[in-house]
Structures are given as structure tokens and as C-alpha cells.
Image (cartoon, rainbow, N blue to C red; front, top):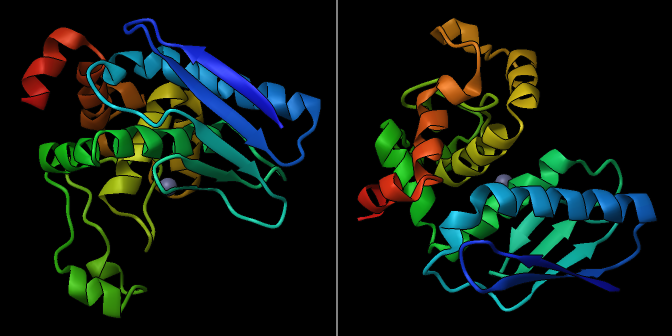
Length: 206
Ligand SMILES: [Zn+2]
């Protein structure tokens, strides 16, 4: 078990992460690098919000990757990447804002389910999948895609635009299809750029 602290630049606070479970030294270094990188980019969004006193990061080779219960993050250490770490941290950011950030992005991009009830009955039926307004989606969509996943993928794509470009193309959603060459130029990319700039953030959050 070990503890990692991240000092936020825009507040006098620090974020605390406790790692539980076995991890190799180089993997712990990767986790720490991904966490530090995440807060460097998203730092300003932690001003004036309450966050958990401590995030517990569970590393379990038999489990999956997910964010749970406000302050619990689970990772499977097998094949764990900075992409996955960033994605789950993005959920924790959205959660710290009462899931308001994903809702704001859904409204800003004109996205949403045509009929959520039908999607739940027939999850395989593409017609009822989450409709991505203002495409492209960060890295394609599937039956599990929704506003919360859209936001987490958007934050991750913003931080790793080259990896996002590659993933989107590999899944059949190349940005060129919508006339873009880089994620930062898309509406989602520009939405986040505004969110990370405090003077524009005030207008967006009000
Ligand atoms: Zn997710």
C-alpha cells in the first residue's frame, strides 16, 4: 500500500491517492505519471468544489476498470494504460461536480438517447444507441455509450489527442469523415478547452 499526493496549483488543496493491491514499480510510476498529468490539465476545475479527502485506487488482476462510489477507483493491472487511468479519473472529476459536466456537454453538443427505455430493452439495436450530436465522437461509440462515457472519453481524448485519433480511425470513426484532422478542433475538443480556461468557465458553468 502506498500514498500519492498531488498539489493543486489553483487551490491550497492536495489530492490524495492510496494504492491498494499489488503493482510493479514501473506500473506504479505510470499510474502516478497519469494522475499528475490529469490534474495538471484539469486543475482549474477543482476550484470551489468539494472532493473526497482520499481516493482509494484498488489494483486487482481479477477485476475490471471502473470508478465507483465517489472515491473508489478500480483498475486491473494487466495491460493497464495511461489512457484507462485518465478515463476513470475523468469520471471522478465529473462525479465531484455532481455529474454536471457530462450533462453540460450533452446539452452543448445536442447529444442524447432517442428513447432510453427502448435502448434498455434492446441494447444491441444501434438505432437506439446514444446519439452523438456535433460529431465526431472521441473514439467511436458502442451500446454502452452515454453522456457520462462521452465526457470521460472526451477528457481522455483531449489529453491524448494522437491516441484518440488512432483509436477513432481503428473503430471506423475517423475524424476526417467530419472534416477534422485533430480532436482539439472538434466541438468536444473546443468545449473542453473553454472549460479549462477560467474566464470562459464562469459563463459555461453559470
Ligand atoms: Zn467509463
